[in-house]
Length: 230
Image 1 (tube, helix red, strand yellow):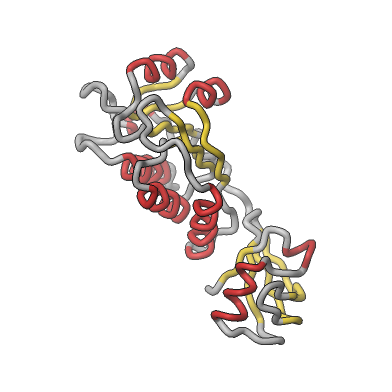
Image 2: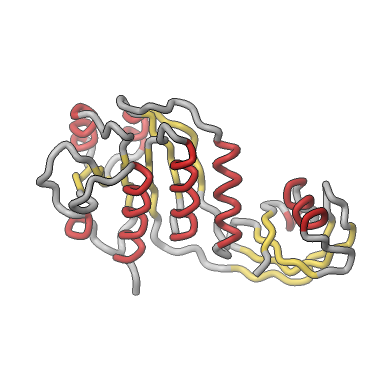
């Protein structure tokens, strides 16, 4: 299904500039064409184009379909990779698989301290449309490790500081929300792991292989969704 994204469509009746350009200039939609618009908050709208302007395409809503948000919440906090393409790939794939919140972590061993949130947001929006999801994941700005732990006590931390960690499937209990921490290329420091454990976090393994940061995030997301299949 061809889907456009506009969070304020119900209030404004107008697509934002990026979506307007894609709709009118790229896809060549015209006045009277019917299109589908998602607001990323749980609703799809069938609309008729009334003013095919390439910067502010106006539409008339003819129907609305709402969807219940899933009761479980998955929040992955992950350190941005040195190569930003890998962080973007992570964000795209977990959006497609199913996630509620993504937070970027600033850790002791982080090699990237800055990230373009606007670009990452566009990738998440695109993945939300591609996978035809009614809800867009929330993206949070880069947050210091300890600040994040203080604000989000209790969860799971995946790391490679030891080879004797229990697998996520044996620690996480299906049917519960989860906050999962994924470290940078250099992994979490011993001090960071200790701080997380003192604040209610449980250590987990994501398998026998040593995974790249973005791969670990995708594996954790996939496991959560598979373990909660009904």
